[in-house]
Length: 265
Image 1 (cartoon, rainbow, N blue to C red):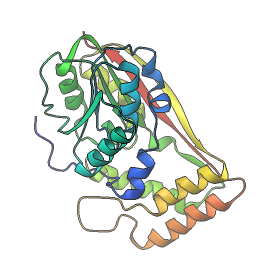
Image 2: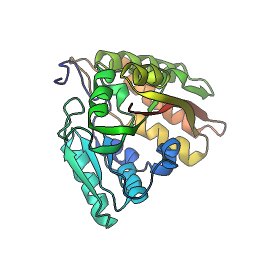
Image 3: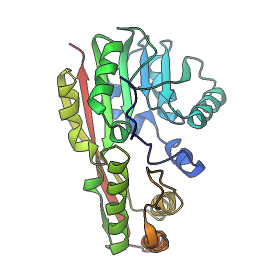
Image 4: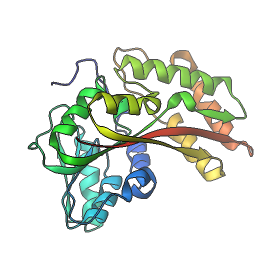
C-alpha cells in the first residue's frame, strides 16, 4: 500500500533530535531481542533514524547483513557516517517506505522497529509488509513509547499542557502516541504467532538526565499538519517549565515502552 496522505513524522529531524536518537544503543533499545540473534542472520531495521541501534544489531549478527531503512536522507546520512566511523562493514542504509519495502519475500530473519509504529497511520499494514519480507519462523521485534504513561515530579501544569498538546499533534499527524500499549494488538492483527509482550522504562532523575530531557523538548520543533504552532501562546511557558523542572533537585520523569517479539507462521 502507499503511505497515507495525512501521515507526518511529528519529531522532525532537527539536529537536537538526531543527536538524541543517535545516542540509543541496541543493548538498551533491543534488549528483548538480543538473545535471539545469532551470527549470520539477516536483519532489517525499519525507521532506523541515525543508525546507532542498527549498527549495534549488526555487531550481533555479523557476518550476516543488516539493513536500516528510513524516509529521511538527513537521518540516513548520519547513519552512514556513524557506520564509517565505527568501520562496520556488514550494515547499509537505504531510503525506503515501510509500507512498500524494496526487498524480496522471505529474505530476512529479523525485522526490528524502534519508536516507529507510533508515527504510522496504519501500523498493522506496515507489520503485514514486514511479515512479507520475513522468512517463515523469522522474528518481528517492535518497541514503542506510551506517552499516556508519562509521569513527572514535581508536578508542573505546563508540562501537563505539553503532554496534552503532544497527543493532539501526534494524532493529527496520523499517529498514536500511546502506541506502547497497543503493540500486542497490532502484531496479532497482522497475523504473527507466539507474540510475547514485555515492558521497559526510561527514567530521567540525575541532573544530567533531567537537563538532556528538558532541552530535547524545550529546543524541539514539532512537525504537524496544518499551519498553527502546536503549543500556541503556551510555547514559552512550556519551555520554561521543562527547564525549571530540570533544575529542581527532586526532579523525576519516567514512562514505559511496550515491546513485542513474535514470529512469522
